[in-house]
Image (cartoon, rainbow, N blue to C red):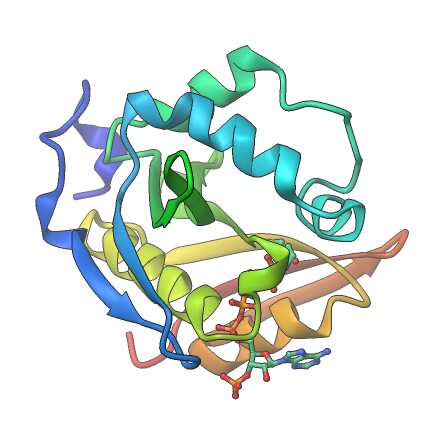
Length: 185
Ligand SMILES: CC(C)(COP(=O)(O)OP(=O)(O)OC[C@H]1O[C@@H](n2cnc3c(N)ncnc32)[C@H](O)[C@@H]1OP(=O)(O)O)[C@@H](O)C(=O)NCCC(=O)NCCS
C-alpha cells in the first residue's frame, strides 16, 4: 500500500540509526531526521559553498528561511522522509549530509534530493544517504523516483545511474529530470 494511504506521522524509524566509517576513515552518525534538526539544517546551509547550494537548490539564497528549515526537519516518515549524517563539531553535533524524499502528485512516485557538505563530498556519504532514502521509500510502498539535477552535475547523475534504472530522462534549460526505479526492484 503506498505510504500516502495512511495519515499522520509514523513512529520515529530507529532502524536507520548507526555509525558509519567513510572512505577516508572519518566517522559519521546516520539517522532519520527529527524536528529538532531545524536549526542544524540552517547551520548546514550556512556552511555550504555557493556551488553546492546551487547544485542542490538551483538558487543561492543567503539564508535558509526558518520556516523552510522547520518544514524540512518535520517529516511524517511516510510520504516525506529524510536521513541525516551528523558529526561531532566543536560546538556540538553538526549535520554534514541530508537525503530526502517528498511526495509528488503520483502516490507511488517520490522526488528525491541530496546534499553533502563540501569537505565531506567524495567519501561515500552521498551513496549511503541515497541507498537509505531508496530503502525507506521502497519499504513504504514508493516504487518510482523523480530527481531534478543540473545537467552538468555528473556526480549526482552518475549516482542515480549506478543504483537506479532510468525510465525517463529529459533536459530543459540546463536541468535534467530523471524518473527511475531502484535497480533490481
Ligand atoms: C551529489 C552528492 C550528494 C554526492 O555525494 P558524495 O558524498 O559526494 O558522493 P559519493 O562520495 O558517495 O560518490 C560520488 C561518486 O561520484 C564520483 N565522482 C566524483 N566527482 C565526479 C564527477 N565530476 N563526475 C563523475 N563522478 C564523480 C566519485 O568518485 C564517487 O564514485 P566512487 O564511489 O566510485 O568513488 C554531493 O556531491 C553533493 O552534495 N553535491 C552538491 C549538491 C547536489 O548536487 N545535490 C544533488 C541534487 S538532487
